[in-house]
Image 1 (cartoon, rainbow, N blue to C red):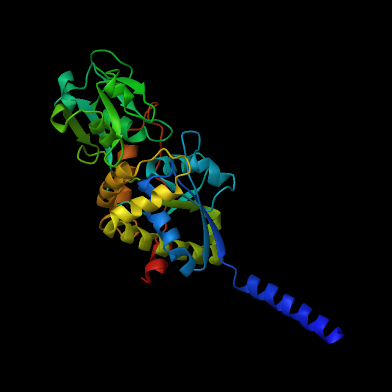
Image 2 (image 1 turned 90 degrees about the horizontal axis):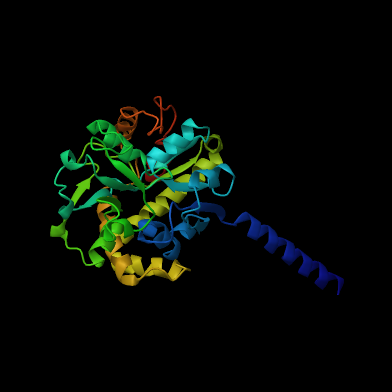
Length: 333
């Protein structure tokens, strides 16, 4: 009986040690917004087992109007976050040392969408108009654009009136604003769903107006990158995530279904997520996750060209705000 007991204990100890030896590395990802196809690549990587294949145990935390990814990661609530570069650079200058480790979104989806009936056909028609703007870090492209146009943002016939816009399209539908902020993959579709046709709209893409800024990238805290084990974990995370993004591009309807499965709120519809995924795929197309330094420089230049009390994103050239080491390791470069 003693031999049996010892054997049983030995087996238990071995199983415990084996479980510890092969336990997957935990990673917590904080999203910039709620569960939707904007983040489909991460949900696809989770459901298709790409993270598991890289020995990762990934937890995806949805965002929302009251969640700032920069604050979450600064407080230790995430290992990596999805953020727009302008917001990340602003946070870095204010003491949250975020570093871009990958850039899944190659192109920008930010639009200013206007009703033609307001008489807006070009930026020359903005003076005297009311423009809806998202805040919480999303306002930086808008203020950079207004600075480029030489337009004040305090109202009056020679400037524009800024309406702090919620994350919906009501101000345009209810005609509280002449133009509102929209994303190609989300709110623009909501405007169309409200019965407004494309020929009733004048739409400006920020990048076409010379104020394009990089949107959804992956960011970590700078001090974490001093740990080789963390670097290795992030390289595996990026590799699996980009595999998820490429699968989502090629199978948009399936990716949309996966997103719906992870939406605990029940607020999303499959039809809208399919529309969103089709548009998001245009923004990730051509990206292998590597940051294009020229795109980074364009974002920084645009922000620095519009420094003002209204647009205090950054006031000096950032240093150490990105690294190519993670994507190089992930891609075997």
